[in-house]
Length: 509
Length: 107
Image (cartoon, each protein chain N blue to C red):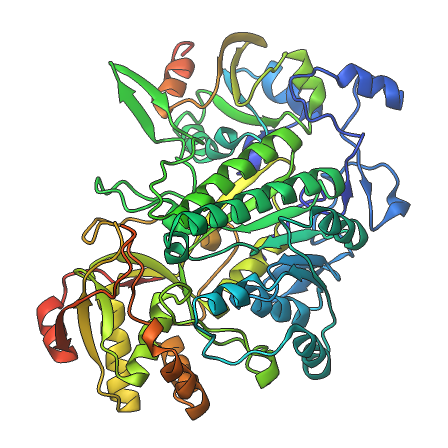
């Protein structure tokens, strides 16, 4: 169990307020000593919010393994009935995680203002997997899975006071922050959209940090970031997990400095990606100023439709978008294959990205929540289970579509509406989830693609793809142009295999 | 972190002050990102200097007495002790070579 030796120092149930002075420069230690009338050789003491009978005790003296409040589960020791609040609980990830956590016996609460539904509707698209209204979802979760979710409709940016009330009422022990606009093309539509995305995402997160400071300082924020924050540097510099390791050095002018702990440079490829970088800086500083705790999850491209919970009943399904703004590439490719649109590669299609299946992403989040950071700790995980070029992904989808589902799938290269490197080195480091949190991917790309084909070839879903097929080919250019990208060439799968065999690495863990 | 690098207020005297070989102590904190990143380097140096010098880590939030005694004002702070005395001090993340230079200065 990856977290059995963690202690109360990591646990959100710890009550450190007024008992520990984190100004490790010793500035107000004297005041603290006088307050508690302690001798010179005092030790750090804390109280436990769940076990008040312990009184003042040494928080390093009890491990998760020893504490009766932590129980063994498949993904590590979990705090019994841990109160997890999900911001953005109605979304693709948020709803899936709510059911996943609920099925582990955690107490799930969440907020949403249905922005995702509104944004997609605004663009004239829809989720191709039909989803229920929230009231229906909550009812179905209770009936089918015996999960009670405490939901409140709140806009985290514009209803700060209502969010304050809710956090004060629930007293979450972990906050999963999915409550942002996740779309690069949406942020590039025009000035209004760019400003909206940055305001919504950055100021929303900033407001949550202040509420954590005031109401839940021992709670961790598990924040959804993106691998896209890093960009794809042409030097081929490794994409470390958020920060340089200590043995990375800067050499200049015959002098040398350790870069250990410095945030690695970012090169975000859209105004949405920039908003995630800004979030990172706000969270890093809030952890420093207020001793908050956070994991920043730099997620690779997410894909997939399946967890046991969302598949248990049609009313529990999570959304799946395949339009140019909110669809992610693997999901889009499967939808295109089903209705006969050649799979669209932007430019050369040799862009390389990290990927993770929906079910594996849920496992990762559980492992992170089970092993909270220490006071003041900001850490990063690159959340991916492998990486591949988009061409290789297209080949995989085409192969499975043809061989398993008899679909005549072709691949096309189209003009690239984005400003990005199409051919670049890519060396992501993604060890933390495996080494520190015990993550092992459960789902292969091929397996999840098959599951997607099985679901999306159902007549009612195929019909929904057809209805919105005019929103699949991109029209949103980074330049501001609004025209459909032109096709450069179309080719058969066999041609593509012959051309690109062995060119790019496709590595799984 | 390997257990044999961790020290605390209550064994600092034994492990550092009374040590017969030089000891490099990393005063660190979880709120300090560079501190977090130093661990693999310190583990490596601990093996490299085994028998000649010791590498130890002390969390400043959990061990305020020693922190205050040695007037730690920022993290990470590296202090080299020999025969119970402070010989050298460096503040901020240090490269492997910089730490070797500190340790080698008393060997």
